Image (cartoon, rainbow, N blue to C red; front, side):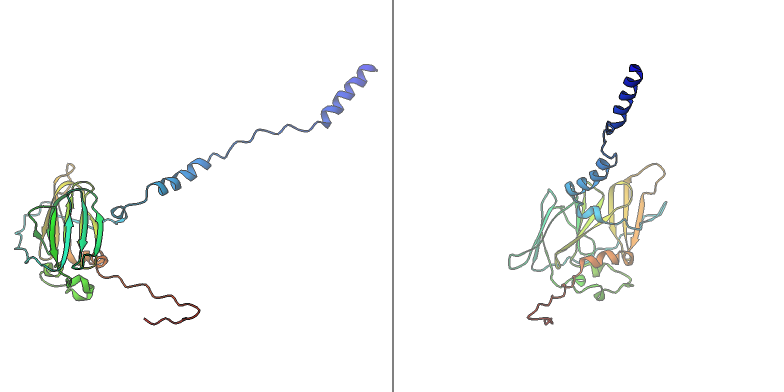
Length: 243
């Protein structure tokens, strides 16, 4: 009887004891989910990293075309200063800085207007205020036999790092970055109806020569034009602001 009583007492105490909780583990997805957000905050996207690819048209085996004579170089009160490290500033006649930006890499070659080659890829050049793009795309003849005169007032920069052709517009203080086709060591030609790119170093079997009609570049060139000012916000005292 004593053994039976002892056995029943131990069984009752075990039933009354609270269960021991299992150790909790952090969810496995917590660390990977927060890593990209932290990486994005730590490394914001650079302007040229936001440029969408262009629809370059390969021209395999295309014969070399004759490069027409470039248009005359423009001039004006705007001063563009490009340093060897790729830093660019545009200053107007009053001494105000209209553009301060950097290129993806160091400048290798530079052109102005519709393809006028510059002797050095860095220096100081003068640009006009009344360039065609300063008035928007409406000032351009999209189907002109030679589109290069409508590129007056632009600065084209080829750099050595990330395969971009950067285009600055001193009259509006804006800059865009055009991704180049696959390859390395690029040559650029400004033809009457298109922009042509030739790569000296490509993968085996890949085309060396690419082109893009000027009309296909108009959506990108539009970003160099004037941007409309945002509408004024009304207040309690002036719910309908003028202008």
